[in-house]
Image 1 (cartoon, rainbow, N blue to C red):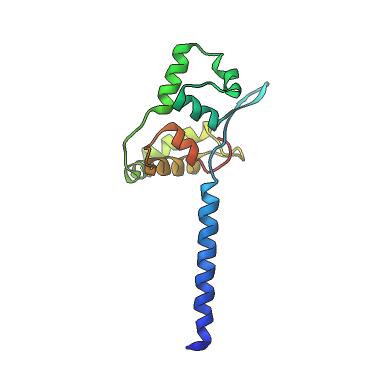
Image 2 (cartoon, rainbow, N blue to C red):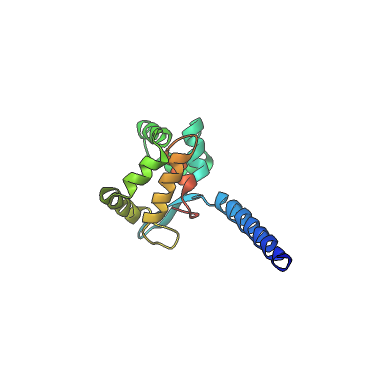
Length: 154
């Protein structure tokens, strides 16, 4: 038995090491910005932090001002309401819905609009973001979906 004792210790250490790396890496994953492509003019970026400040405090940061001044005050208020709107649903319910044919169709269509960094359909990234956002203590909100989106940009 003694010759194999080191194996258990090594496996335990490896498991703890991998687990800690996974947890720290996962916490850093979030969409830091929304990127809009508008050919032929190029890409436009909005910081997730700027949107969160706008949603929570109503403040328009310098970076967000470029976009905010292009819509009227009623539209800005509607955007703020959309960003703050909280859905009280369980992660299980969200998961079950997005694994149905209807839920998958919705995600595939949304994924065509909200692509990953590599310009691929955001289907899987959106599904995980919605489920993780529903598990957040603050509830399922647009901001929480952005926070849980597993790539740097959306």
